[in-house]
Image 1 (cartoon, rainbow, N blue to C red):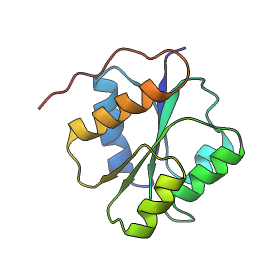
Image 2 (image 1 turned 90 degrees about the vertical axis):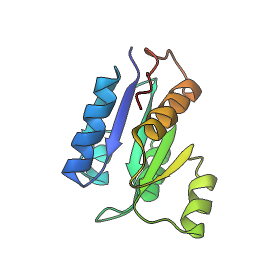
Image 3 (image 1 turned 180 degrees about the vertical axis):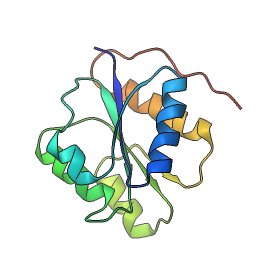
Image 4 (image 1 turned 180 degrees about the horizontal axis):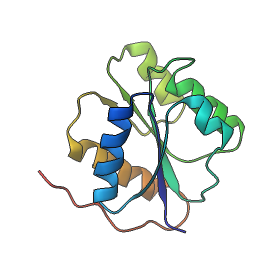
Length: 133
């Protein structure tokens, strides 16, 4: 099974932009508009990664990650945020988040983080991303 990238972001423009970037680089993508949406149908993929927005209505990305972990979803996670602070960074580190990316971030930063996450995930990894600058 091809690894999938699961995006959770309440901003439709961000979701669409991330989906286009990742699909252009050969990745299968499934996007969710909220933490509740991904919790309703959590990923069952053996390989893949999560991209979670930190600031969302009705909970943040780390709360969603905690709930996914409680449901035995062990996919590696990347956190994206417009604003970060030391407490959030510590919590992300404790939760095992592989990367915290501050918006706006360059495309290659996300592609590199996804590649790293997919390499750390169990199961086969799909085609490598190519960095375009």
